[in-house]
Length: 339
Image 1 (tube, helix red, strand yellow):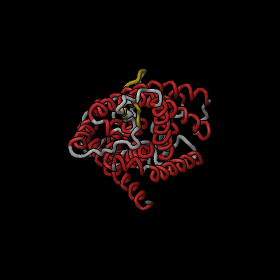
Image 2 (image 1 turned 135 degrees about the vertical axis):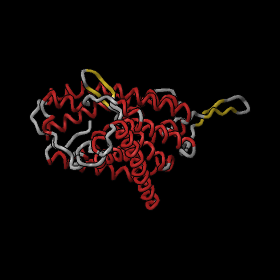
Image 3 (image 1 turned 120 degrees about the vertical axis):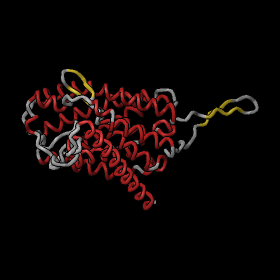
């Protein structure tokens, strides 16, 4: 769903840019509590992991592919405000270094993938956690549903923006049907990946999952007469990834970006497919950084496509970790100054 330059008129791009800037600004202020629990390292690692998995397009039928958006997953791992920063970091690196998504459309992409998917995914997750058993494992089905819902909602939001400022006149109902229809299928893939990742983390280190840390079991107290009472812990467990967990996370992320990504589907993603079918794909313009040495996820000058793609993925992961860590530390510094 990376929107290229040219799909929207200038006023719409400016408006989404302002929305994105506001969301990032608020998130820098509000991520403080989340970062006190997790530390900046998990935010940087989460950003790198989302970047890596987004390189792996999976087929969804009829010559179409999709990839993880990652908003719901990031929100479950590091909290919603930090997740907005995580997703914005990914989209910034993709846009500036890899020409994936237009630069004038960066605000649109952050709004759709870095804000809407995070908020929708997290709201659905929290709503389901209120009715599911109060244990860490409940985060997996709750976030899976949140991930599934977040993708078609983002596609519907794209349709709304396009109805306001789209470059080509397309009947909104026709566009909505196509976008939501295909992205429901993409959402199923999103849900499967989200469930797999969260299941692995919850099974090994549930304390590293933000949503799970707030699901501590109530304490049952029994007095001398056998009377029982329950007490809810007033503070969640705070844990930070260090040593082996951090190393394993980085290794897995590098393996996905430098190895698994080489088996990604070459079919166009849902937005590209719908654009070609409905006739607005021609409005797309090349990014201003289309000549970047890493454009299209390959290192220019390396003839072997697999080596080029693997190296580009590894570089992208390392850059994303650094940028994500820097933004998380910036949020922490703003918190310290405010306190």
